Length: 437
Image 1 (cartoon, rainbow, N blue to C red):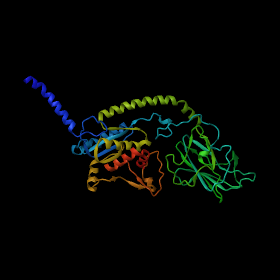
Image 2 (image 1 turned 90 degrees about the horizontal axis):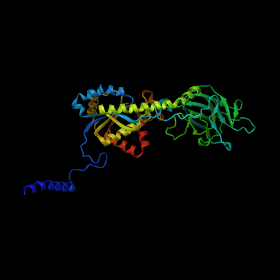
Image 3 (image 1 turned 90 degrees about the vertical axis):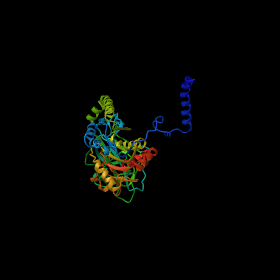
Image 4 (image 1 turned 60 degrees about the vertical axis):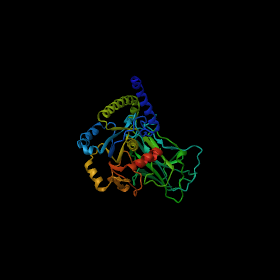
């Protein structure tokens, strides 16, 4: 009889446990990451410090680990209140720096069959295009240089119809965000230049426009009549094999502050490509560079994996780690903090900054910053941006009366992070613009 009881007891306990689970049991973990694991209570932190860091900045991260981060760990009372994580893109750019459109992006500089040792007309009109006057007296077009060029002439549309050039028009080239023109050409009946393919051209002072130069050509009628203009999408752009790009409104950038008139083409310009031999050599050696770069990426991945294993202080976000992707890195880190931690305030900084966390907590306490709807940082008017270090490779395109966040560090409460996370999930492009500005 005693043997039967020994056998039945485990069965009875199993049935009782099963019924208890069906009738309620412990609180169930909501759907989400790791849904089949027990629901561990998330550790709460007063402040999460997110340190933006590039993949290759091993030395800067180690400096932090041996300075203010080390100081934090030596103070248990403070250490329990703070979580520090480096924010690193999980993916390296697979395009070598020499082959990118600019060093801050991961876009391939797609130059092929460059037109060398000859002048190039930037725009070509279709043969069946007729010339019509518009009501616009000021027309402009913006462009970006991807490889050095020299503009030799500026031009205007005008069909003389046997009576000669009868207009007064000025054409100017501006560098983005500069109020003074780099050079200009004035067309008038006594001085109208030379007609080539329905465009009248005049030579200008020649400057080498370097890679990443952003410019705007503005046509201005000095008469009461409007200009002969074309829609930007109804002309053929001769990019010389990929050395320049015309940028239209709505392609990811706002109009420059000093741009006037409507977007369009009221003439053209003639240019030549500089440093042709260097360009050909660069294109010829590209395959070897790509092969070497991909090997370096594999080594970098291995080093980062080992660094993360040793220090356990890195959050890898699903982003290609380039400077232009900094806003996306931040948004992905916000998502990680919301889904993986519990906190009151998030402090963002860079890997070349020193953080005095004791001073931060003193400020939080004295200013009562540990409450909802708090954003703590530095704002300036756009007109004051000479004193505000903008990210390298970015140009400010905001009205001078608009304010923007201006510092490497800022602190914000959890409910603001939640809002940014929701926006990034629903409209990622808008969210990136919000974080960027």
